[in-house]
Length: 349
Ligand code: R7I
Ligand code: MG
Ligand code: MG
Ligand code: MG
Image (cartoon, rainbow, N blue to C red; front, side, top):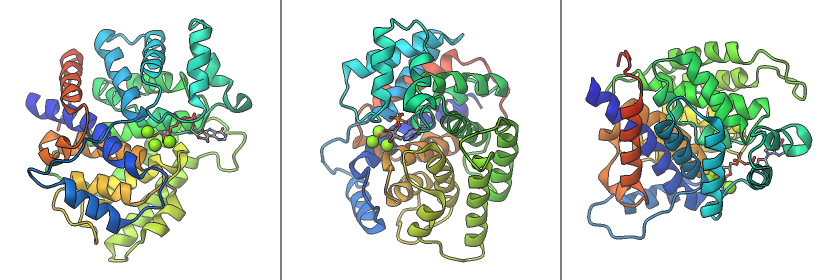
């Protein structure tokens, strides 16, 4: 059991890294199954030498969350704000969101006096609804796998350093909950997508309680998850759903509402074969399909990849794909360190 959970920590964090590195070259593109299949055929082959893909802000910020938990397992959010800012100023060209950099500037110039104030001021005081909170959250459900309430609290506070809009925060919570749910599964077990989405909807019911004043729908994530569930149900009755239909229904943008449920859909759909995606490996199928949707490819693949990695574990992540990504060894080391400081769990896999 010990080894199993350790492999799931690695799988989950590598899922973020690989989705990010392999998705980044396609970010902002319209999406094409054929082009992405060719790309994966090229890199998922032995002895293939090609330049490594670099990671972006998604992984950069996930690293900071993991480091914070490793250095301060009691969770020090001011320390985390410092790590985000330090990481950004060390390597500002990692493709950060256009507006989040203002938060880093303000945090630094205010000497971290109120770590939540700069994020609150974003977008004329509404806060950001971008997917930046969700994309980096993976270490939180790993570390708090044994304490759901603490996971929710920590995921909320880590997100609020940059994103205070309820859509931004609740997107990060949904992503954390999905990882947590998949961590509990047997690696070879196929999960029933109707039960899986129903559980997510129930948990979001407890979260989407406050009035969201600038939206007509006060339970937007539950609405999105119902669409995910309907799509998967349709497909089990052998209906083909095209990428265009998925994007039109669920979205593929940098908005958390239009990317977090999409990532969950990619993970669940990719448990089974997908036409035009030629691989037997469900981890590769997950990120390859996510990238085929176009749009915010690095982030949707990173989110879907971390859920898939939490389910299948590192065994499922192919050597060939890893060889094409920067920072793999460092992420494995971090996952192991995080595992070491994680309170011993009673998790049932
Ligand atoms: O959410 P964030 O960290 O960006 C993450 C994305 C991922 O795709 C990464 O891979 C990287 O490419 O960026 O950064 P933010 O700047 O807070 O939000 C991202 C974008 O979402 C903003 O630049 C806006 O375009 C949009 N956005 C909003 N637009 C209008 N009103 C976010 N919140 C709002 C809003 O309230
Ligand atoms: Mg990115
Ligand atoms: Mg971008
Ligand atoms: Mg992105």
